[in-house]
Image 1: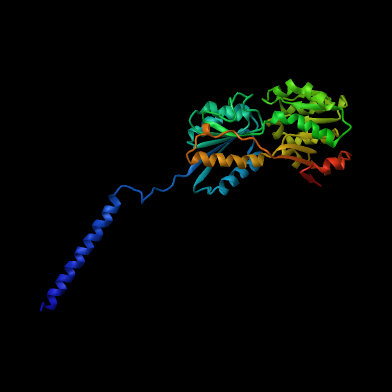
Image 2 (image 1 turned 30 degrees about the vertical axis):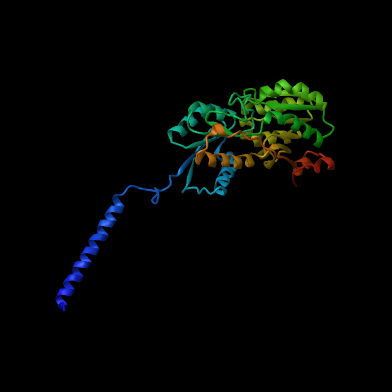
Length: 342
């Protein structure tokens, strides 16, 4: 029978051998290359945001983009980060800001407006671009086809130029007796040209006399409204323009001062006291843009993603403003309204 000492020596030897096996196994795991069973930590995606607006004005759209990504499983700060650039209403800053996003190493850029899309496309031909615009991307020279955008750009567009006639129709429905309507435009905006070509047809179809007034800079707004009052304008419509959004409070105040019912291209005008908005919901469009970002970050090519057009449009009326203007909006028209602000 082996001695007690001999059995103890063999036990110690076995423990040493086991310890060596453990150490060798751990070293092998550390030295082994990552395989199917050991994936590296997921990289945080960098989503660029190029906005023609200020951070404050852009907040509803940024929040919609965030919400859309979160609904698709992305977690801000862990699986994605937002890298933002705001032009503060200065379109000439967009090219510089687009270039800085590229230098910052973003994986995809979400742009607002036709000028923003053009600036981003000029800055890069490789980084994917998702646009959200109410302009015509074909007429604006951004793409040649909505179904097959090609290149590195895709997104969502409301084709805002086509909505101008609908806005005038809504304005006449809310204020049936109007005949003389002023159309406030920024002559350098990309949405002005198409409307100017069609304005006579639109006026004839609706039985309106349209007077186009220009305001290229904020300091021209007061003079434009003074001209409307002097010429006995009965109502006003604004064409889409970034500067107008930035100056929305001043514009709404001028319309109230001259007691002019107005229809606007952006919901934010109504939120600060404007009478009426008709158009696609930009908030909804930015949530849809998140779907494009999600697909691109998962490997889809922008060229293979058709540009989407919204199918839902909103008609919003501020009845408080209507009462201030002394308007009695027909009940039949109010039945068509999607939201009434009391």
